[in-house]
Length: 426
Ligand SMILES: *Cc1c(COP(=O)(O)O)cnc(C)c1O
Image 1: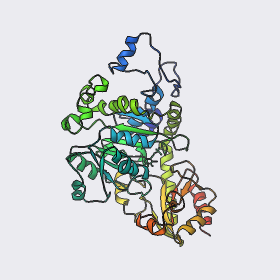
Image 2: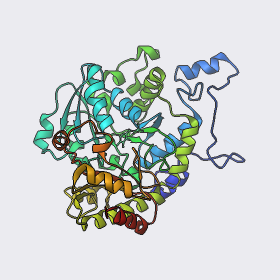
Image 3: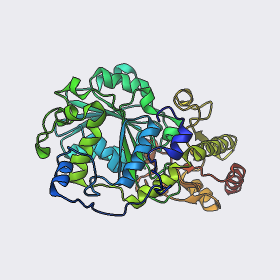
């Protein structure tokens, strides 16, 4: 199976019906599963046999879709979560407990930044943020004895910085910890971080994977390559007996390939319950079936819109990794071979007012707090997500008041450019 190409995996991986079984992944809309004897069910609770007993722990629909995403990323195991936030929380909390420390790129999604800097902090987990552009020395200096993981985003939302995955993986491994990469924006169609040394990959499947603005969801994929037992003292949750599961030592019983996802499922999902509904997993799979067809079109439209905006008088600057003059162009070409996604950000001369005027005039592109949809959408942080900030505060945060983030959808690029052209005529 792993020899198949990505396009085939998008369509077929994760589910292989038997003779006379449904061709499409069945939605197992059932909270529970029936057994003939208590003994049969007991084996499942003891993790002695694999099977289903309660959908919060595992559900066949979710498992098919999770294993498709694992196949796409080149990992060995995967799980779905209720949202991208839950995926990142589980991926970190599975190996990082009170007293631990995380090294993270400072250029990440706002929700994840808050998760690490505020919520995990309240749980006794410290963090050090480093610029994605930092030198190897600066990166190495961020580690402490209690560091448990390194975290970054392949293409950061919304800054559109590109992570030098090999640089971050090298530093993580030199300090005996895994690299976790949120690969939401490029998706495995454009980048597979595990091939560059990442150990764990996360997704907000809400974005391109679903791709139709239909279902919030998340996913975690384990490469199976990190040797937890080789760093036994750092990861007691995986390398010492779990008293809440009959003294099972995950890394011993399930090996490097099964330990991480089994623990995240049987411990974190059991106790925290952020499960994706089977209905949403089914919708997600419909998106995955065309991901390899949609991503090149999102990239084509993003590139065309970015190139058009570059030549416009009212536009101060354009940021898109696919542009030759972009600071991350070389990294984008190395890791993705293209701009990587359909999200473009640009700054209009004239600040907040100009952005408001421009966006009001757009006919195709809708104003939304969303990205990675089939329909083009845009957002001006200064008048929406960051509206409580003054012009000075915005400037200090590196968010110019005239910044517009546009997520190019799957429409004809000429129609998108015409729409932008008439909207710029304010
Ligand atoms: C949207 C997003 C998230 C959060 O995902 P939700 O599904 O909204 O919880 C995390 N990381 C990145 C890069 C995102 O774009």
